[in-house]
Image (cartoon, rainbow, N blue to C red):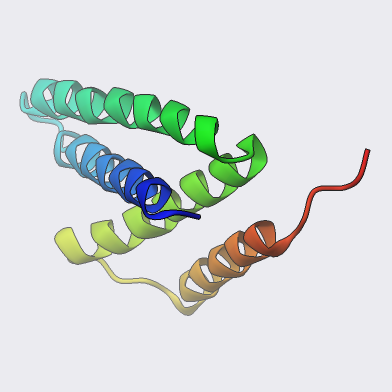
Length: 113
């Protein structure tokens, strides 16, 4: 992976984190849901455009696995931090499992045709 691809991936992850924080923020049952909905979708749609850019430079299975896996993992950590929630031991194990899965996807080579 080159620096440009790493930057695109970091941008994708950041946009996904912000989108999901806005979705959570807007889900408290008040009228601020419209702002959470709109802002979450604005950042989420932008992140999909970035993912499409990543697809140009990386095998789709790697782009999706590392991109979405990393976004899921980092979003979980960000939501714990921003909204001051707690994780159960099994959830920590789940985070570790995602990390291992991403490493395996990144380390594997495509099967020969």
